[in-house]
Length: 128
Image (cartoon, rainbow, N blue to C red; front, side, top):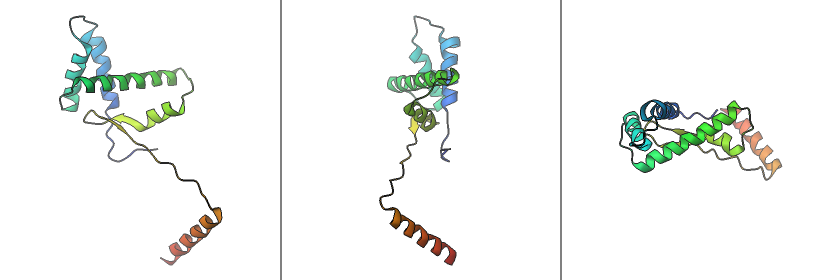
């Protein structure tokens, strides 16, 4: 569908690390914070230090994605925004959230002129 050539999707890896840290590493220990564990693991994955804001942003992005995946598994209807979110947003190899936004085609204002221009384009294609 809309897969740019430069897209390197690390969303599933980041989500796997989030699940591993939550259920196997952190284990709801009260003397440490989950964000500290996530910052340490994600900084290894993305090869850069992560600040607190980066960790909170990635964590909320993955939680929103998990909620939408749950709606898909339960066969509930997705809204337009949720479908766009799943199709057009991902985490890149440096740990930033990227998005692809496609601009819709403008409406045809004058159909007769549009037909004339298309015929001219077809004629020029045959000449080449």
